[in-house]
Image (cartoon, rainbow, N blue to C red):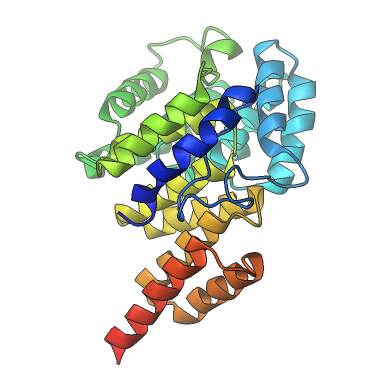
Length: 310
């Protein structure tokens, strides 16, 4: 396994830090266990994960305007984060701005192939706006997703969403019981959840890992380590566009995240974009003036690929 197998060597060093932290610490994601500070990622100047969690708390309390204000900052930093877009849609809807919520639901679906709940809430919104034809199109789109998924999706979640959206379109269900029923679940121990997802990755269970990492992302927001591993798992499954999107989000959350720079470079190598891979090497050289595992690993893969091409 690329770098992931080395993650276990970092755990002992991080255990004390994790226990001392009141916020989710999360060991640095991938790339030789390397974040921006050799262990736990320092993150961007705007703490998007903290703002996200505060936004979720505001939504749970029905404080939609406060949630919207903080979500604007999250989306200003990471506009392609599906979870933040979904919550912004809920904040808009909670203020009676259903028409405005539509574009955020659409973005949530666009940026996360697993965001099945957004199909249902968008369908409900369409029906409430009297746009039944759009709701029908949305149902057909979800049916197409379901037909292509086979064993590469959370079929339990997808089946439930499909049944719910069908009922919405057919007019056999009422609107949701309340905004709180649409919110993401909290996770009591994010660090344990993260390590559990890493264990799934080590076992090659990438789809299961994606499901668990997505739940974690929903609970704590756009954390660079989680986003980096989502990029890794999607890349391993051949979803290169999705992988690129997650690496892009990871680097928006933490521009100096060494693991994300390494894995993005590996994606470029895998897709034959050597010039872009070389730029990732240059970035890692800048971040690691005295050397680091992420630079060494990417350089080795880059040179190996060049030799194979010769």
